[in-house]
Image (cartoon, rainbow, N blue to C red):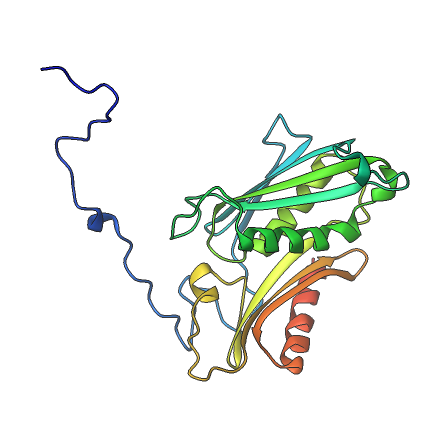
Length: 252
């Protein structure tokens, strides 16, 4: 009997997809140590691993791991601007693109850039732009591409750090490196470098004072280059969180 060569034959033995479903995540504890052993109300971040120069095709590249959060950044340029109407004779142009791999999140996504990717790309651009000496590269553009390989929380903060290291690896002149840090406020307590579960769950009984804050900081110049917050927090809470984050950058 002839077979259909265009049809992909499935395996003879198969198992139910429900066997591969992830178990529901446990609730974030109200008090005591966090799920990974770190402490609340302390600037206690996950161990970080960084390596530069992994992608030979790019001018500069960097890879960063923070816990289970994994990102890769590639920098291309400076090179001639593709669109002549966007050419600036006095300074260069910085473009950023941040995307999530389809397998990076618990819920599988698509390769098409969504609204979240566009928002994060804009925030990444706003954080890096003040640190790059664009006046050194007139009529040129520098492209920064970040790919999130695994999202385990605080992706924007680690993307800022990873992109800054990739720019330095590419030999781009900068005023200072840009470091990112994020904190999740949960009622009266806060969690530094929150995980994916901590970012998407609120353990506090009250609905007020819930939100997150991501700061991009230039440690040598002692300046903030980017600030992004979400949720509902009072002005005093935002001020207290910022005062907790900034000293951690300058601590040797």
